Image 1 (cartoon, rainbow, N blue to C red):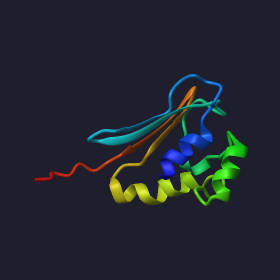
Image 2: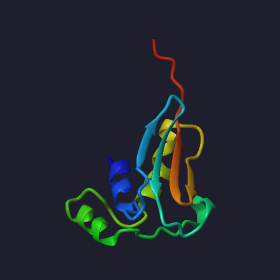
Image 3: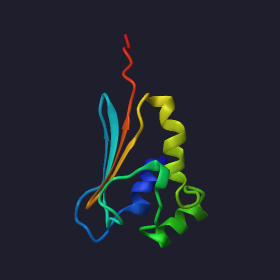
Length: 108
């Protein structure tokens, strides 16, 4: 649920591209139209979160679907190790892309 709310809050609504949430065997990926502050991969050690749609974010905070600015990044850093042995990858450009690697399980 958190990823869907983040897609809605951070989306560039002036762009006609579709936001996407993709689940594969190895990853789950979100892609969202974006007005980038930077271009390229982001480093967790020096990320400066910025609100893309402050009014939409305020509504989600009021209904308790979102926390403070930057909380999604902190959650990624904290919880991805539960699902993976690799770091998530955040790439900013015209499309903001988050790739969360998953551990492959052999389910019988």
